[in-house]
Image (cartoon, rainbow, N blue to C red; front, side):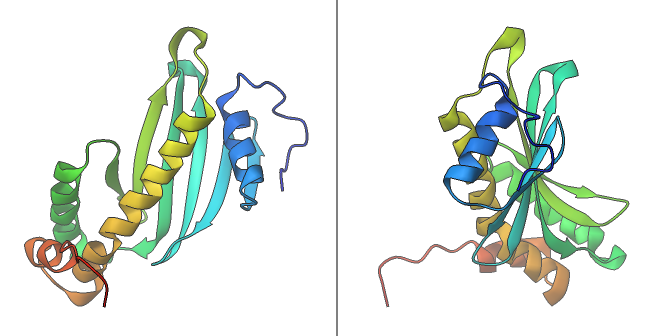
Length: 166
């Protein structure tokens, strides 16, 4: 449910597009201000909080996708190595660790200069790509954080693709 009824009334506002996508898909969402909307999406591994923020000063729609995985201080160096290996494989977006909380998140931005507007397809793809990246790399991060594996071991164990059906 939106916190600010009527706060977004322009179809040119990228957050209006994101809000329409959430409503159309019957996803839970919350507006915490005129420039931010958070959608909650259930994944196979965990729930994701996808926060879209309109950054007017740089004409960018920023997406941060966080999930419940806090990295203990003792595993942060290895987690950074795993994130570097993951980021080498990504064509769009990247993973970060917020150092003050140890939280991992996926981030991406869409630049919309000079009054360009975000399309429904662009925003839907941003959202889908974020969830796909998080779902794909969540197991590798889990292996590093909770199984004590090295980044290369975790990437090898988690990144194999299966073919066919059992």
